[in-house]
Image 1: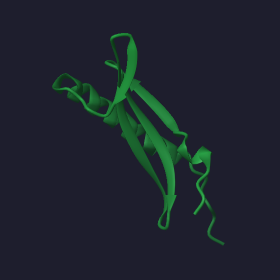
Image 2 (image 1 turned 45 degrees about the vertical axis):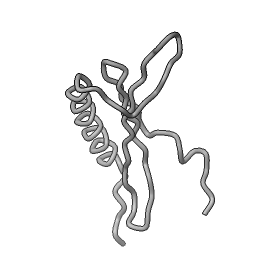
Image 3 (image 1 turned 180 degrees about the vertical axis):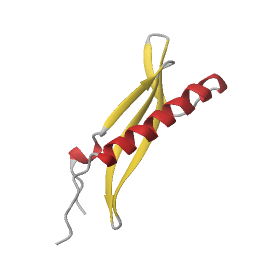
Length: 87
């Protein structure tokens, strides 16, 4: 199965203090549409910018707030889907 480059662009990206981000991806499978979320932390060290999926204990509470915001955003995206009439 071929994969398009556009398949890798997030539907939405949310940011939180401390360099945290949540990228929400729209996916399609055998059972229909679903969403996946990738959480990351961006930081600078010795003049270089790094991105990791490892989080310190002080990031966990802001990460939980970010996860809640991502959940709400996905629900909003799902609610905007056009209703298909059953004919």
